Length: 346
Ligand code: ADP
Ligand code: MG
Image (cartoon, rainbow, N blue to C red; front, side):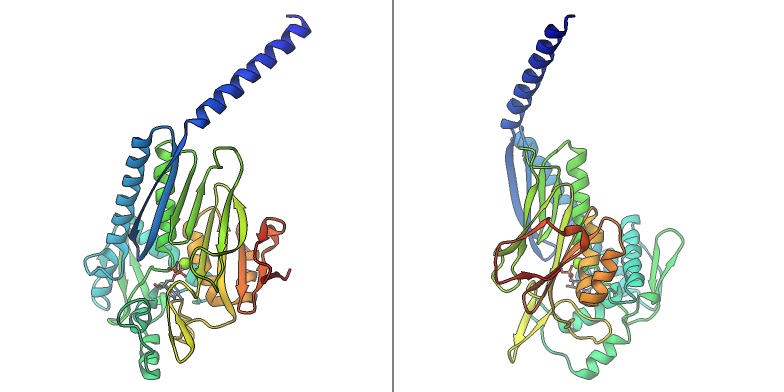
């Protein structure tokens, strides 16, 4: 083939391929549905050329989330976590591999954070009852008592998937990590079903699957901690990554002008109070991001940032009470403020 003919041939193939791609993409429509589970609002959006199939995939994903909730909720007596809690101080309970693996992961974050994250926080969470009709400020005696049963080192494992709490009043609560796990599982289902573009939003636990259909990155809004849900203070671009935020605005009550929120510091027994109002983690695994966002919230700015900088492929945005924004080193230039009352410090 002569050089000129070859060039012409390549040009034609390129044009054909481009047209074909554009043609395909334009047929992809967003299919979306929402529901309430895991104590929060969930929204799944997939882009597909087959609407019925898209709805079906979303339905399968919701069923999977329900399955995870039924296994791992500390508020359901029949759940595997419920069973471990009811047998505390007595017997080992055999649970599914995924529940046992998630407890182990939670214990891992407890070790990494020296107990700032602690899945054995259950008794304290129940005592405060934040977000439930029983929410109240417990007495100091009650807090001291509950604190003595918060210790991840007393979660015992045996054989493959047997778990036991060494003291009768200990309780496991995976609320700080289970939503991330559910988000990873949903992402897995969507990938397996051939979905190339999706946004999985489990109450602010966001996973971006692929890029947008036009090939650009998703723009994920970071909640303004001082404004109603849906008001963003900044935007981060992401694809095939998760953005998970822990904030003091998610679940709380106010008494005598003081806010009592649902992230408890296992050292004090009170809601974590160290100047942070929200911590967002950006990384590949939503399970890790969830565990880490709660961890960083409790650890505070200095220790929290140090932990994140020590981890490969993990970034964070920490917002403090005075509207200062602290970014981990990998986020420089990737996070954009849209409300100028916030100020990036580093
Ligand atoms: P959200 O559930 O709002 O996304 P988090 O991921 O930060 O927020 O999880 C908060 C939940 O984690 C609480 O509702 C409680 O169930 C649990 N929790 C609270 N404090 C801790 C802690 N120090 N370590 C582990 N889990 C915690
Ligand atoms: Mg969390």
